Image (cartoon, rainbow, N blue to C red; front, side):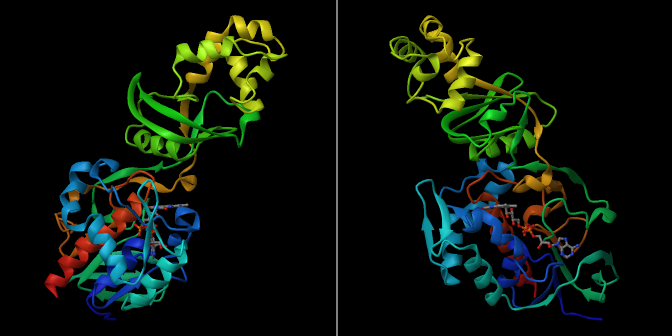
Amino acid sequence: MARGSVAIIGGGAAGLMTAVLLNGATVYDKNAKLGKKILVTGNGRCNLTNANLTADCYNHPDFVSRYLDKYGYDYQRELFEKLGILLRVDDEGRVYPITNSARTVQDVLISNADCIFDSNQVHRIERDEVGYTVVTDSGRYHHDIVVVATGGGSDILDGFGIKKISPRASLVPLECIERYKSLDGVRVKCLATLYRDGEQIYRERGEVLFRKYGLSGICVMNMSAHIARDTEAKYRISLDILPDISLDTLTDMLSSRRADTALYALDGITVRNLSEVILGRAGVGVDDYESFVNRAREVAISLKSFDFTVSGTRPIEEGQVVSGGYSIDEVEADLSISSMPNMYIIGEALDIDGLCGGYNLAWAWISASIVADSINAKI
Ligand SMILES: Cc1cc2nc3c(=O)[nH]c(=O)nc-3n(C[C@H](O)[C@H](O)[C@H](O)COP(=O)(O)OP(=O)(O)OC[C@H]3O[C@@H](n4cnc5c(N)ncnc54)[C@H](O)[C@@H]3O)c2cc1C
């Protein structure tokens, strides 16, 4: 059965935006509604892009940088404004719909997409003489052009021999060897530094959330993106809980604090369950004020170099994005697959992932726009 020229497989952020930018397409998605995942983004607020969009926030900066002049932040802001979504930018450049509701983004994209929606899982795509046949439970449909927008960890093209980078969790909490059950749920604003095989590779100031298995929070999720890119290496995270105070100043400050116990001496600096751990690492008993004064430098070191050895990532389902996917080596500049005429790969299905802050949805919009421009020029 013929269904017109363009099939979009996957109606998530990237597929849905492609449908918005084309004049007619069939979107296949196994979900009952298009754009379902958009609803969970940005804690329901949808951090849809970043005003400081730069290529170095992606795993393949050189690849992404070719597109930023044309499809960067200014283009995206205009695109959303044309669709009628007013935007709000926070202090860190994260961009949200002014409604603070991800549903706004889903609703507006759906109402602007001129498409047939087939809510069936696509089991496979077959190459036919003049294009492709999309096979679902409801039938077999011919299309001249296919856009693969099936998201991270997709296997829909595996039968075509297209190189794939194995999927790994990214923007995901990290499991660590050092575990402190008593700290589960405690948050600190700190300076977090990531070391790969002993060498510093990333540093971010922000909030870290202690979990019983290790560490979470935006800084840590961003570190997981670096880890996903080289899983063989050994990683250590060092937290400086008081980054604005030097070690010498902190040592002097601690040694002159007056209190009945070592634990009380840290009141006003850290919350008590964190103080207990900090003192334990410095070899100071919670009741031992004298030792606190004598070992003030060790306590200061414990506060400024709170070290964690990364033992792994949490499961892929806990990640915000999948690192890996179909290789960028397989696509042309317009994201068409070199070996498969008129077939494109966009969004997370391609091996592009970014840091927290709107970069992943930004890639969904960028890649959708590249492909829509290419298709619109053909038909
Ligand atoms: C909790 C959470 C929060 C996030 N927050 C943010 C954020 O604030 N900002 C940001 O930039 N990014 C965020 N992300 C990441 C962002 O959601 C993704 O990068 C983005 O959705 C990728 O878009 P996509 O269209 O490529 O894939 P997806 O959104 O995953 O869409 C793929 C679609 O394809 C469909 N599909 C797959 N296979 C088939 C098949 N065989 N047949 C039919 N349909 C199929 C799926 O049902 C799905 O709808 C977050 C992710 C999560 C999980």
